[in-house]
Length: 345
Figure 1 (cartoon, rainbow, N blue to C red):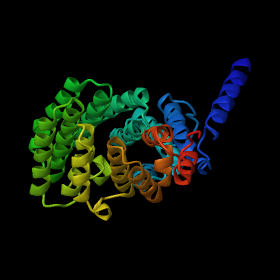
Figure 2: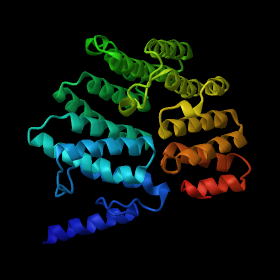
Figure 3: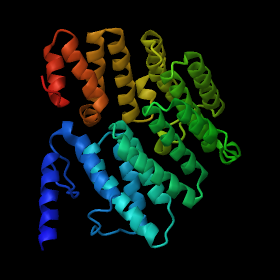
Figure 4: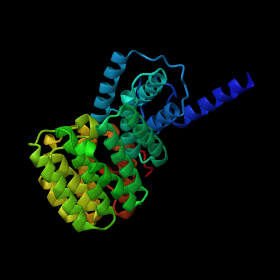
């Protein structure tokens, strides 16, 4: 009884810390600035195997739920995703333990990894990415294995392990399992090469970044412009490669060239709300680096207009807003945005 009471007390304390119940209630929290903390807490508990008393639906129901979780991600409905995605991880583990295939679990962990990277939760991100890799390998799915490698490469880059990140991405891109496949496999190669390009940018190799980005663009052009891998890697076509080029040029220290790249993208042509939010936040980051404060704020407000939950929850946006608060004059618009993203003014 004493142990049970201790666990209950800890659960209540943890729930209060993120201003939301630990178990999915079907109702997103009101404070959007705290959504990231809620989602991370629920993913953490699912990955630790807590709350295993949740019932496991049928495979058909889970397939539908995964589709809805992907839609939540694409439309930046993170309150809803905080309910669906941990439940999918619980169910995926339960079904795998019962002898079912590992595809559901692999896809759930890949989505969790993307979300954890976005929320700058690298420790849990490594755990999710490695579980995605193991599940993908158990399922024998070359695309899922390659996507798990891409996420691992992103995490390695964020840890400043540039050589390792480059090696992971390019080795996966050259794997025979991708080279011998159809359009989706070619698109995954393009995503991996994009990842390597971004790593080159972070390592200060602008020429290498541009060469690899051009290689990814050539693959996209050869595939005919169709949006591929929307539910798998965020989408791959010439427009998404150009979106990548914006952040890569800025990361390489050339915000002016990043903004030139941005002018070649029509935001409405991007495959999802999430990608459009990425477009505006990348532009904001470039303006911020260039010292153009008003343009930076306008881009952030545009991102907020398209995806308020994403904009309010992301640590990268909070950091950018914090920098604006301390580096110059504070306008009413900036103070309002700071309040909505949870940055103290």
